[in-house]
Image (tube, rainbow, N blue to C red; front, side):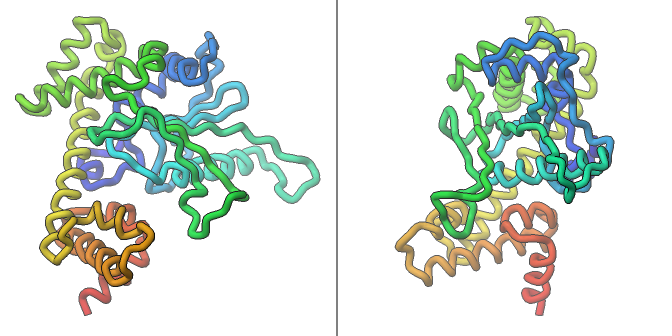
Length: 319
């Protein structure tokens, strides 16, 4: 797991939060898999967890991935809605397949067809923004030119696991149900006490009520640490977005950055207004970056461009 300094700086490459801790347990991964797929596998040893021991050099990484019955499953949780999951999942899968081919020394140019596991991508959303109960995200919606027959597609299913959503799914899986319960309780308790106390009290309550009792008792110190880091990071991102919206208004974006991102793309917008919204958004993000309020990686994710382009924008802005 990343140390606390790197984590709070936005480096989530080797992030290990409660969700990923849970799904790195074969028994728990199998529990969630059976619930999602309406299956009844009963041997946790059939699960092959994909680890990071090989030293992946990616700025983004999924929370949990494992192979079962020749299918590779990428499961991730989100406290903030992200429309780019199909693209991220494509990166995960391609990287894993590349390593597999290299490890097995397979010949991509040979006459023998190379078999690869069938991929499945699932996200469990538990953020505070209101979202549908189930969403289907497709990579093809990100293509610059729309097409009815995409030659490359990635489909990601997003389940909302906030209270009142997907009740039937949560009934089938103790792991997801318990995870959702823990997160909701920490959020609720942190309104009247410190985050540290909210996490500590929630874990006490869970152990006394038998909610993941064995896991929490065994891993208490690590769980408290990663939950504190996770919620701190979540709050930091929210504060960053709030400041970005305020800065946007200061330079003339009356409706803020979020509305600029959504409405600026809508058909029929006046060209000048659209350009103004984009320029304002870029200026706000660069301002936050120069002030040290966000990291370079966060700026690239916010603007959807690579680090080289960010550096070029900074040079132009300073000239």
